[in-house]
Image (cartoon, rainbow, N blue to C red; front, side, top):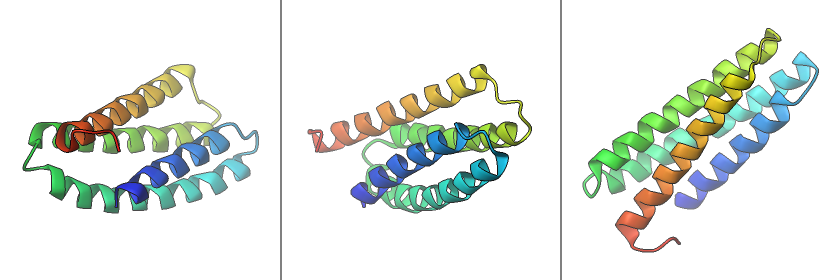
Length: 118
């Protein structure tokens, strides 16, 4: 299930980059729909993985869940602003920062509980 989670995040990142760099709103909307498929897989696999890690590191698991959901929310806001032609560098920076923090938190959680990276 960890592989599904990681591949889903990779898919989401590719769809977000592709969608937010499109000049056409219609093309960006296609990538928004495809990114939502990634959200679905991320949330399902994330809930499963959090049930396995919660007893060992409840604070880090909760922090990662909050960061992950916040990052998904920022991605949705970025797509909405893209549709309104009001996407700002500050929002992109916040979204990238959320993604980096979520990634660091996820790898830390895995390393803490498993004692190895993979």
